[in-house]
Length: 608
Ligand code: ADP
Image (cartoon, rainbow, N blue to C red; front, side, top):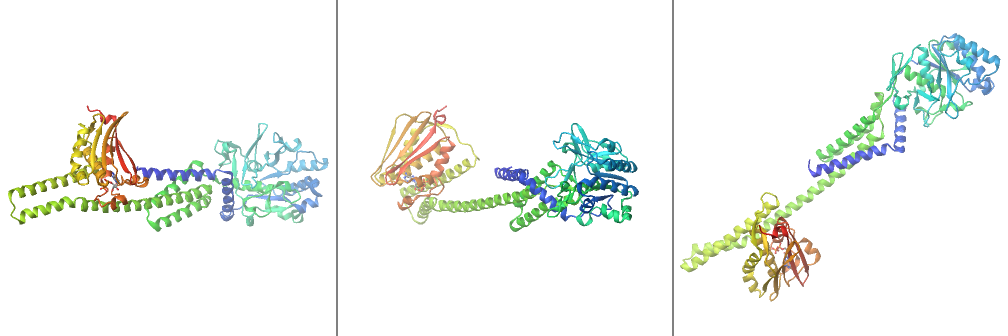
């Protein structure tokens, strides 16, 4: 994997982590719930024949029985009517924790005896530490007790099928009614509950929470008010074979009304209807399971990875089209999952898509830009290399061409011929050396060849270079002095080091006005050997100094001086010195002169 790929991978991972972190905040969970409710309202499951019915103690009935006080009488009348219809089971959502009027209670007891499979309600006491159960005379007659505790947040999306108070575990009213109606037992595993063949996916670690599958409002569970039933007793036929839920539904007894995903802006639903809905969920096996967190994370990772792949491999608009498709897919995934009874959070895949796509797109945009800049840089370098070839190499080539022409065209005497032959020889050697140095430094910096390692005397090398520069210096009346304070034993590639010294010296002479002085000195400085070439020439400012080691860079002052040059020498010098484990320091100011110092480490100083 290249460094750039690792960087890309790192950014995408950060996008994924951000998406996951954001979706686990309170706000994220709220958004997930809102999306869940939206999906609930927009997806219509296949219709089914309800196995339950609600006998509603609605406002009309409660009023007819003189309000809350008459509720137990209303319940007794309801039970007497229901008894005639032979229901499968009856679940009562009217608290019977206190004794009522003796006559009413006696009638209630008689009614309870007549109906098989009656489930009575229990609720947590106000402090939540104990159960509030029906009084004993009723409780004895019940097929079971079920808790009527709903967990609104504030929307009732799920119910805890089990609740524990004072180590006493109670099943939810609807579950208990289902069990009683089938005369079955509830079998428990850590992952689900099994009743009469129905495996209910309510895990213990989630307190046996079960998502409630409500029926759409236009297909609500059949419901009839007590007063309506009394006016038209034939309607009791609707209860035959069904599990009947009896409870208050009106505004008068409001404590029991909750919001559901369907009732966003509408009237809340009565508790008894919520219990009936839980019953339908179980009876019809319409269970909604949460997608495991690990799978959600995996899905988000896939979404981010796809975003990464899209922008890495698809060009231009195709990438954006594919990204838009990915976004739509990620956003509609929760709905598609819901149609398969799976609940996938909305926010995490959506955020993963948005963040993944924007990260990938931004990153690739910058890569493309970087590549473009690099291509421009390459072109620039190529042009300058051509410049180097045409200028630097043309001089010796012209000399060779001219001289060879002279030999061919004229009848020259032996001396002249010898002189020209020598010139051709030296110029072609110079050309060959230039090419060799240029290539070997390029190869060296590309890591293709190894540096030669031999001991040599740095001072002797410097003197030889001064000797070679002397004719040029003399022409400009520039004096060159060598002030060593001790010997300079070096270890490395003699030929390359020669090039470096020579280049610094020729630059000092080239960029100095006539009549000035160039001094070379070397000095031991701790573990280093410092060899400096100082001139009194045109100098450079700070900005220029920073650029002179770039290939083909020349200062304006150098261009204006009329001295020929290619701007490649110092870049080669720097590479040679770096390859030897050293560095170059430059001190310069315009018009004052420059001092180039080679700092070579002690390791290269000691000859072996
Ligand atoms: P060249 O001399 O062929 O232009 P170099 O790579 O050797 O190329 O130098 C790069 C540039 O650095 C020169 O063009 C010049 O502008 C500047 N430079 C180098 N040495 C000196 C110096 N001694 N004094 C002033 N400027 C210098």
